[in-house]
Image (cartoon, rainbow, N blue to C red; front, side, top):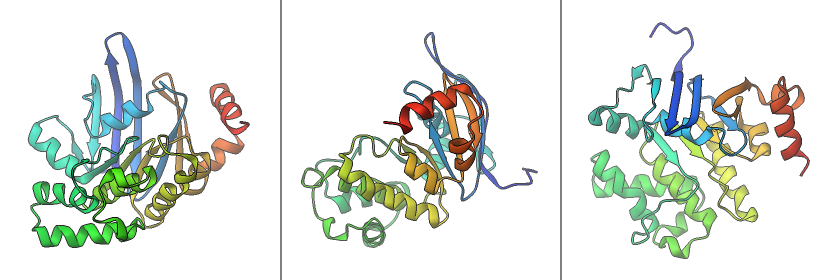
Length: 249
């Protein structure tokens, strides 16, 4: 790629239809390595669909997604290789209920990365320390709070040594007092230089962690700017209306 900047994610003219519903309506986006991009917008604006198209959990109707200089073609082998480089954290934690925290974190390492049990466990413990709950290694998900479960889910993604982390509303299913503990982990990741794309309603997080912020509405990117630019000088009426609704509650 002859790009002057080091763009690790390049999305070109992405469309995604679900029947008659146009979830994405021509989205183009570049994300530089080690940047944190936060995506905001009303429900149904296409934020999560865009995120899911980046790692082909949803197959785009048309358009291109490039990850680290490679065009995603949708071939199973390539998708598996690419997905191994992209960590994804969902709104719901998707932990296996019959496995302990450390077992949840070692499983994919052994299967996808081919690591020995010992190595996988060592890495799992490193990541549990990183997210602040090493003492929960042998706990089952039902014994963990929502915030702890989400931190295990983040540790599970990090244990794969991803180049990119995608977060799809990672705090929206959490009780208010647990949101901070998850955002703190995300702030640490951001300051450590992880490339992150986060769909989030947490404006404080967007303000403090984001290098760039994207406002989506009706399947298009309405504004792509800095947090400072978005909060203090939004360019579009749709953005102003959205911000007035969320910032004054």
